[in-house]
Image 1 (cartoon, rainbow, N blue to C red):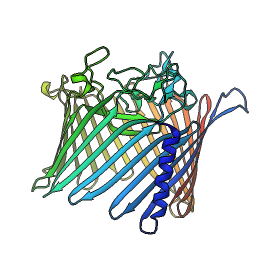
Image 2: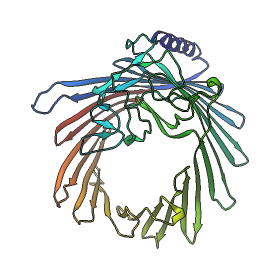
Image 3: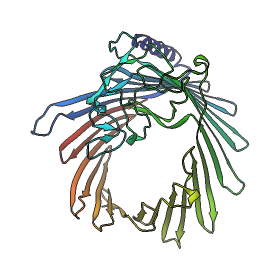
Length: 471
């Protein structure tokens, strides 16, 4: 899709929206975000990378129908546009969503830097690719020249029906399974698009049935859930996912559930499409069961179980109770294979007043691998109060593995939050890891200014400035 066509379409929609303001409820927000990243820390004054981002959100409601726009702008122009349509048809709630985005690659996918897992040996870090290494790779007409075009990424249709206390949800996703993803699994992503390293372009002008290439390939996924409550107050929810799991990422936005690339018209590179590409396979991906609100002798119990094909059944049991109004106790038992009656981890927390103590067993052998103490205090509560939170963590060696101090101060329209963290070096010593400062000024009437600065052992990490207006 060309930028001119998308811009003209959005402009037309806005004109229509403005023409109907007399009878419509128009709300939204505008945010201007500036990221300053130093190119080094060897001297007092260095050059900076600047990334200027803007986000406009507008919702127009007419007679129970809400049309919403979420548009992101960056140095390359329009980076994404999300169109939402929400309405109620009797007991049926409908949420229709179109997602368009510009494809980006990451230079650090080649030679280490950003990957799908943390690796201290090679210096790779899971998560989103740093902005100064993100490259626009959209090719809108297939001529092999980068023209920063915006392409269709997905359509999501969510339906919710509530009848006689039973809630049924269905989410249908039609998605480009090859669309580049600059987010590693450390941020919750599941895609592995390391071949988009900025050396190849993404051809938005074509569609094929081959996955993991530089051309869009579309697949279909569906997630259905049913939830209800028994007469005794126990809530039971069941969820079944076909061809969908995890999260899907585009630049600056992410969505629950991502379509499995195996659920396309072809079963992989070089395979024969199903009936000429007319249909896609439907694969069972996940079954989840929640049972919440069980009461046994004053103990509240919640159970969450996952069934995944070719994997052991996993389950998490959470129990909470109060000890003679003196302390609240929470226990979490996790098993990655309940058929073998194996415990994978145990976490027990006791809270009393401002103090919380936690014992963490990471292996399920009934031995504490870590302990955590969290103390929350209000300093000078009568005049100029400040919130102080202290976290202390120790490991099996007895020394501290983490110490952090968080301080929050509010004075009228101004608020300041700072977090300082120290980590253990394995020999009982603590090293300063970093300090973060966040300043927020709320002028009222929807106008907010904020900034954030991160300092670490290597110097200034990054500085963020944000201007937000809500209308």
